[in-house]
Picture 1 (spheres, rainbow, N blue to C red):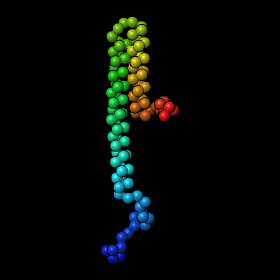
Picture 2: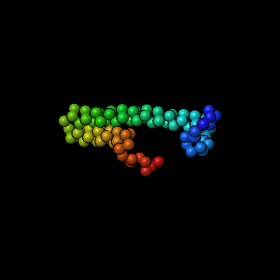
Picture 3: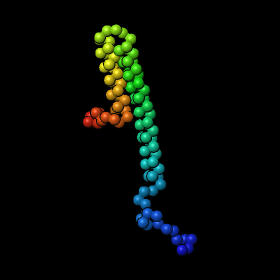
Picture 4: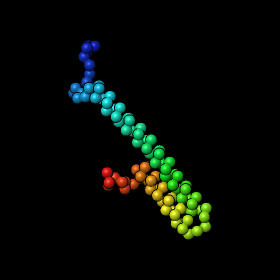
Length: 95
């Protein structure tokens, strides 16, 4: 085998995408992944705010309505966290 001959690693098929299209695709995918990561962190921060705020509301006052509101706010926080991490897919029906 001479130095001019190269072994085909993919069966010898020529790639159907040029370097500019590949760069655009990789750039777009990386940008989408980074934005999704930032959005997940923001949603989890919001969820933590709701959960801890609800627990604080439920425990700080001695009334029944305060307890109910606190539990409701905490449940909303857990729902936001579940949606952000992909545990549930409640909102995918509306997309």
